[in-house]
Image (cartoon, rainbow, N blue to C red):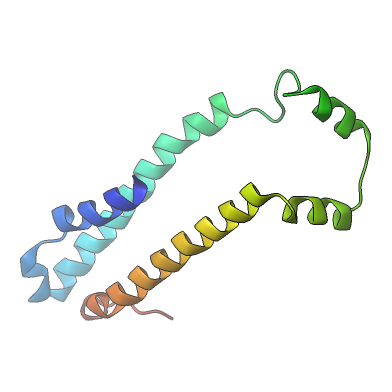
Length: 120
């Protein structure tokens, strides 16, 4: 959903005449980035503060109660999590999503150069 909004919002906020006037284009882009940051912060802050807790009120299973009592080293924990196929799938999906996001950024970067935005 966030990627969809990230692709739709620029086309609404950035005008066609911004190509002929780079200063106006830069102002529109700064406005767009500010609006985007405000929206993300305003929508995610209540969720973080009100809904997400440090620990659940009760453990999700009896196994978790037994497991929380035993302590393991980092190496043991890492080996355990690397053997979980769902975690590996999550890492692969996140890596693909990040790769696509970075690729889109690389494609859009030349389009932003006339407005004064550089990669360094």
